[in-house]
Image (cartoon, rainbow, N blue to C red; front, side, top):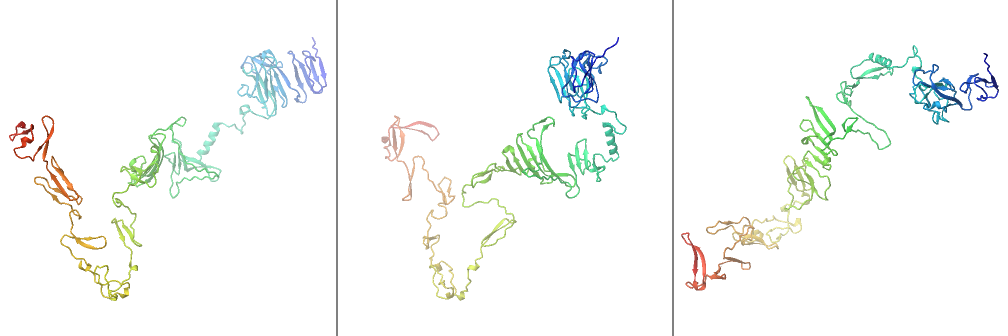
Length: 615
């Protein structure tokens, strides 16, 4: 049976037949575009040939997508899903897409339900590609499609796959120069241009270092030529303990520097900037770990600066300062310690701390663990005062009870030298102050008595027979210096008298009355059978005290003291009334003076008589 192929022709540019132009199996040709079309059994118009290469399309190129069970024509039969995409009736062909064209993958057919088409860099959908990709609707429903606009930056190979199931589609090729997603797994290795591998790189590096091996912990550096590497003992790294050494091949701490010679172990920081910022040395203290730090606790050390010296047999901490927490984790203290006896300084030992600022005591400053200064100022003119226990406070100075200031301790730094008019010198060896009076020689003129002339006069009546008359040149004779009281015009007094002034310059001898002198007002005052009263000073006073019925009265006008005795004895009678016993009544008449008097008494033998009744 013969087959008839009907051919239809068009010469209209970019003209493409429709299903109304062709029946199933019929072929059409566009003679102008040199394209050949056919209508397949699925009623799709398929371009089956094109002369002169792929052309730019002015309108969107549409591919019809359906889903069916895979057969042997599907590239990924046996992998992933058992269903696969059909593009214009063919199972997942490789599609050639032209840069500049837009391609629409129509998924309106109900077989697409649950199988949305998307683009990926890899067939296994590891990385999605979304640049220039547009989706619309739900796969399997009217208006559903996925569209891609191809440009020069579109990767040269992409894969269209179902986003819900594996390996239902295939690849598209764009022939661009974008090799995104392209790696050495996609090409074969040559004989000289080898792929990079860790093994090859490690072997090459090991070979270079092995040929230039140094000592343990040394670091490799570029040599002076800049073309090779070499080991150096200037820097060393202990990878076991994470220690770095500078001029130290066996570092013992995090940063260990050793120098031999002047200025061979120094740290210098320089900073240049046009702001107030400055170089910063900062330490940070945590508890816990790097990955999980926690708050510090009270008493934790914050920073230590220890400065040691070699004393010939061991290292001694000559000086140290420290920032530490106090017993309050949010308050710190700063302490400085220097050695004073050749043993190591320690700012945490109170007896070795010379200076401390205590944040737990409002920032109080203490010197030598003995003198703590106040934290606030005092009032004007107050002075620092100690309580004898090392605590200083501001206090006001009260007036002294004496006429001067008593010096208990006085320290002068160096021996002073007297100079000038009336200078005071201090000898720090003997502790003696010496006053040197001013030199008055320039103010006094020496005159010889033989040169004195004139007539002597009496000075103020004190018996100086040669006196100054107003002119040194007129003084004559030798002056007479008074040798006794007579020469002074004063007559001698009697024994015991004293020289007394009248306040007008006149002196006379007078007797001293009791209490008027500087001696004691009395010396001894004795009473028979009693202890003697003695005067302790000139201001001591003798006091007489009355006892019983005796009375003592004084009269300052007549300077008399009267000791009195009672004339009657007061008592209470049996009937409760008061009266007195008159001791001046005549003998034999006492009973008439007092009646019904009851007097209890004790006899000579010690027995008691109830009452002596006088009636």
